Image 1: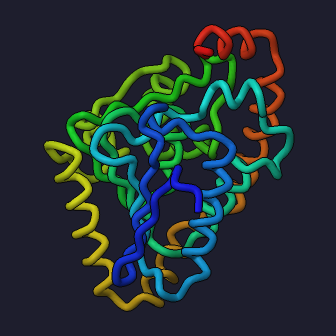
Image 2 (image 1 turned 120 degrees about the horizontal axis):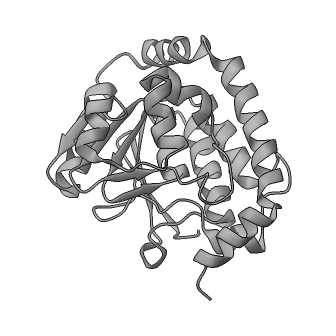
Length: 248
């Protein structure tokens, strides 16, 4: 099994840990495929009650691997990154994120689909799509304005503003602030245990009800964003911005 994402199932709690520290847990095509497989397996496995996703105590994820984007860009909506998005949106089991350090690009937009987001004081959230010549993805153009209002969403999506862990809680993008990564992950596991103590069928029905109200609109937004994102990847602006950041 690929060790780019560590997975540990302990009494119904599945912990998924990004494990590419030399690249700040940047996600490449192999990781998107593996994460999609692990989450789909968790959805189908009656032994899994709750899922915690983390990057460890130092860095959640630097977002998309930019070199991989240049060498192996997604070509259609069946590409691994978009398949992962569909799997995440279809989950009816609780998904908890424990975030320390950088959460960039999809490292932040993934959090919008988690049921609970816990952050440490080292957390730094940013969605630099516009500076890279790209556009929002994973439904962020729909979800962020609804969560934060248009003005704050624009500060993040248009102005490339960085949010600290403390600001993320103040703005409502995260639920809890913890002093360090170890405390953050421990708290996420405690919260997972609390959820495991509830009637599981009722929990999953309730999550579906929370999501169903905007599910069709969200899926349509992800599709529209995805097609525009693919188109943007082939523009001179995006190619130049990505090449400028990629180190051989």
